[in-house]
Amino acid sequence: MVIHNKLIIIGSGPAGLTSSIYPARGGIEPLIISGNEPGGKLMYTTEVENFLGFDQPILGHTLIEKMRKQAKRFGSRFVNKAISSADFSSKPFRVKCSCLNDNLNKEEYFADSSFYKINRRFLALSFVTYLNRAISFI
Ligand SMILES: Cc1cc2nc3c(=O)[nH]c(=O)nc-3n(C[C@H](O)[C@H](O)[C@H](O)COP(=O)(O)OP(=O)(O)OC[C@H]3O[C@@H](n4cnc5c(N)ncnc54)[C@H](O)[C@@H]3O)c2cc1C
Image (cartoon, rainbow, N blue to C red; front, side, top):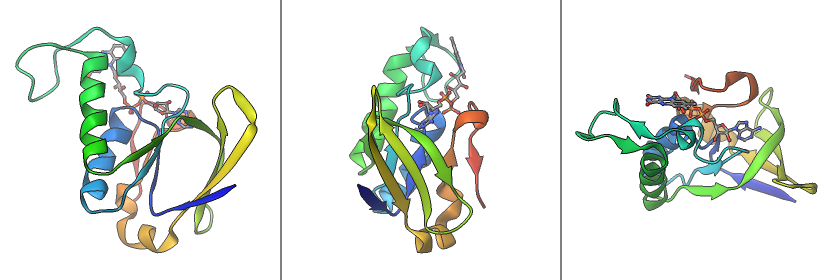
């Protein structure tokens, strides 16, 4: 199955969720592909004390849940799948997914090329070798 989107965000950690807010508020309805670690690394920790805006420590999973809710409120959509391959060499960009725990159920996602011409800076990629680093295409 091939699914077309204006914007695909790979990874649902703080970088992916943060990058979804502006385009979602702009009506782009980004598709966030969560990967094998929905919520990212902060899901594994207890108290986070250095996050601006919280005058008290907040549990990692609670912080991520707040980020998720904020992203959803503006229209971000989530799929619990991992990317198995990606092609950013030509437009539309395309990524292939397999359902978690179901390698037979493969889906291909396309991202709208014209959107990237204007708004490429909104693409955040925390993917394979880029884990823990948000990459922006400007
Ligand atoms: C135990 C622990 C405690 C920490 N405590 C703090 C703290 O107190 N304060 C602080 O500032 N930082 C803390 N950190 C660091 C913080 O968690 C990271 O800086 C932050 O999570 C990085 O965010 P990220 O979105 O770039 O990457 P990550 O959180 O690593 O998210 C990566 C995302 O990419 C997805 N992904 C990976 N491969 C694929 C794929 N093939 N297809 C689709 N998606 C994919 C994953 O599923 C995940 O959702 C802690 C980290 C750990 C491990």
